[in-house]
Length: 296
Image (cartoon, rainbow, N blue to C red; front, side, top):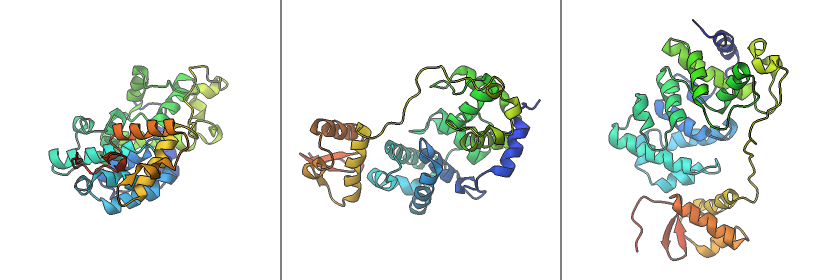
C-alpha cells in the first residue's frame, strides 16, 4: 500500500524538479557519482561549474585514476572539504582496477569503494541505476522528522528509527522508488528548508505532524554551527590555495605568508600532510600529492 506521503510529493516533483545535469537521461553513473561527492555539504550553485569542468577533464573513472591525485585536489578548487577529491580519486582507482573502469551497479560493491559511505552508495544505486534504496541525506531526514515525527530537526546522526521510517515510505516498484528518493530530497532542499520552511508551498502540509502540532521549537542537543572564519579549516584552505596555484613545489616561506599565527598555521599544515592532501618534498618544501614516492 502506498505511503500517504508518496503521491503528493511525487506529483509535486513532476512539476517543480530542477533541471540538473546529473539528472538527465544521458548522465552516466560516473557523472552521478561525481555529483554526489561534490554535493556533500556544498550547495548546487557552487557545484555546477566545477561538475561540468571535472567531467570535461575526466569523463570516466579511468581518466581520473590515471592522473595524479594532486590534480584532483587542484581541480577541486574552492568547493571545500578537499579530502573529498582524494576520496573520489581513490574510488576511481578502485573502479579502474577492480571493476574494469565501470561504476559497479551492485550496492555492496559501491559501499566497498574508498570514500563511499552508506548514503553515497544508496544514492548512486538509486539515481544512476534506478534501484530501490532508502537515500537518507540531511534534507530527507528533515522532511521525515517534521512530517512523521513532529520535530523541527532530525537527530545529529542517522538512527535505526529513521531508517525504518524511510524504508516504510519507499514505493514498491524500483523505478518509482528511485524517483521518490530524489523527489523527497528535492522537497527538503527547496521547500522544507532548515531555517525558513515554505509550508504554504508544501504538498504534504496537511499531513505534517510538526505543522499540525503548532511547529514546536527544537529542544534537542545544540546543532552544529557552520563557523569558518578563523578556524583551522580556513587556514587549510589558504595553504591549499597557494599549492593549487603553483606549478612547482612551494617553499615554507611562501606558505608562512598566508596566516599570521605560526602555531595554528603549522597545525593546519601538519593536518594537510596527515590527510594526504599535501606532500613534503624536502625539508620545508611542499607540493600537492602525486601518488609517487617522495625522494628521501
